[in-house]
Image (cartoon, rainbow, N blue to C red; front, side):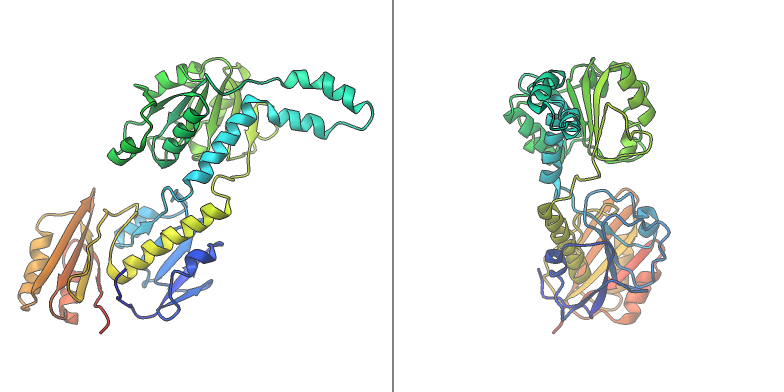
Length: 396
């Protein structure tokens, strides 16, 4: 990481963020605080920020986890504020919980635990032997696991299931090249969600929650599950329509619904195995998420580099000159020309420039060979379409 040292700025920490991550902010440059009216950056886990009043100094928000549903991403985008997350940092933790969920369902462990818990001492051995027959389960090898969503978590789940002797098929119309390369070759491609559902004994969901994935499992496809199937949801509550799941359990299409998101409608249902949102609740996952997002936020504050910002393009450029501008702007024509013209009129030589776009958002990094005066920064900030400008010179 370059040696640029911004003026000491405040990092507001909401929720418990692992100390191993917070220590990535050196004390001489940052104040990590639990209360601030106008911080330069915010680190958060699950706190809902949709009604939070962000101050004018805010430059970045970091989510120590993958999902960002608790953050008003669109509103922050209009201000040119990136929202960082930590995709993949908790992937192993979620993978292990999915495997645990499959085993709990396959071996009927939830009702078996309840049975033993309620036994008295009288005739214990006899009652155990008589009662265990009702909990006979199945082994995983030879059964088919369908994985919907083949990102980091989905790929790890698929690989682990193959190692357990399962047949694995997957569906992800938006799979990235990187994810495809990391996917085990034994994973068969399902042409559609419906095809995957019809031919899988277990179906596990690993997609983000959005308009296209809201109620991905619904009343239209719930009856396409094979009889006695197991549905696992360790992604987000809204990806599954609960009324459809209850319908599937009632018709015995589903034997179990294993979820990390308990709700009042599901509680107490004999076919539901509900866990208290434990997906990323391991010390290792919390440390990984905190470290990853802290490094990303710090690199952005100091160098303007963008990595894993959900509302901005990936944009990172090594420092080749001491005077850097970081410009967030709408993705409109001739923005680079106007930026170059504003600097050229002042005889400021552009040593290097990087411009990236993502949908309606664009981002530009400019390294200059000489200092950029305040009036030039203001002119850039006033350009139509520019959302935010930061001047990041390296300290002498």
